[in-house]
Image 1 (tube, rainbow, N blue to C red):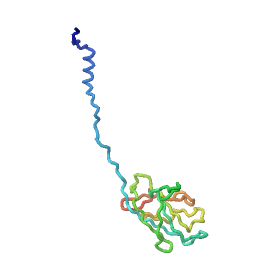
Image 2: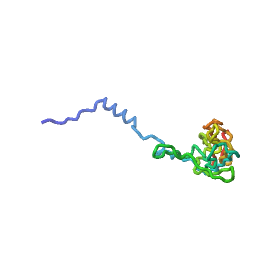
Image 3: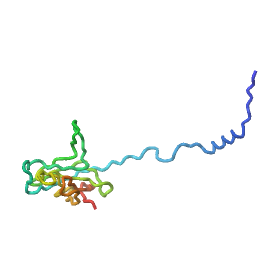
Image 4: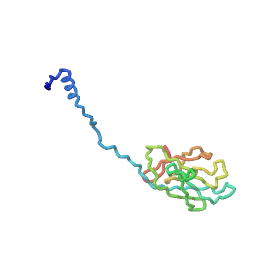
Amino acid sequence: MRLNVMRPVTPKLLLAGALISMGCLDFHKTGPEDASPVVRPMLVSVTVEYRQPNLCMASDRCDDNVVFFASWLPMQLDPQGRPTGGYMFLTRVSAYAWRGVAQNVPVNYPPKDDPHVVAIYDPHLRDTPTGGVTAARLIVGQQNLTDLINAGTPRESAFVYVDENGYGHNPL
């Protein structure tokens, strides 16, 4: 018959146990338990106004609608993969004046982000070198936009910041 005899603890095992207990093996990190909440941008309504030139420089269809484009407007694809959205039609308020109200515009003023990019398609300018695209004579949030990009080309547009009251601001 065999007896189980307890063997004495060796000094190496005692040393290892002492080192482990001194390390405390606490894997809990200090800090917040939950992720910080995502701050959604404030959204406002912004009035958009545009004044057409008095003379139509297109060969036809001068009475087509004026279209407003903005970087904050959602762009989507139709079933054929063509882009839709990213624009809104303005309403004629007098012979050469157009107006609309853009909803859910993200506030980005004072400048804490890139400015919004905006432009107009004007059928009066369709047969010009810009192909009808312009940012001249455009007012966003009561601000006449003066910071034009690619002026005189089909890629003409303007930068604008929008504040919490829905007012536009030219970049500084």
